[in-house]
Image (cartoon, rainbow, N blue to C red; front, side, top):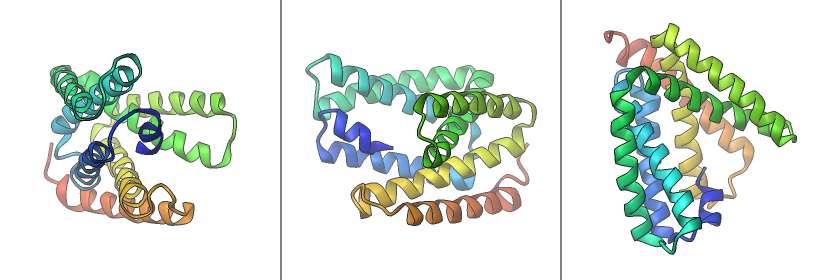
Length: 196
């Protein structure tokens, strides 16, 4: 996830490492406690969206770079996170839709080459997953958070910290699947059982 951002923006490696650590923490929380921490995840997703969007925009349109850019992006992310939590149904829809879009886009990208078609299918699938999450909140949020969180943790740890963006595909997929299955088990059997 961070590889293309790292190459495109002018941010120091230590600032990217900070962002990768935040994404790993977020991914672990999603994977194993997604439904239990639903309101927090909605706010944190808003934070990440605001932070990443402002990071991309300001890195390309201003002279900000490094830590000042990261701090401005974090401030904007905090505002967007607060708004996401205040608008719960919209935040719930966006949480499921964006996670669905990212996972579907990644999976489709492994065997398809038409970028427009991949994006179109991922958008339609993400919207469908968002609608299903509004109707069947508990099971859909457990599935969405375990799958997207497991992928995020595997990708950030292997790509950013261990293999420096040279992770073999088979290893990345195997690690992600193991984390996803563990996350589904833990949430369905333990952490989300007595919630709501």
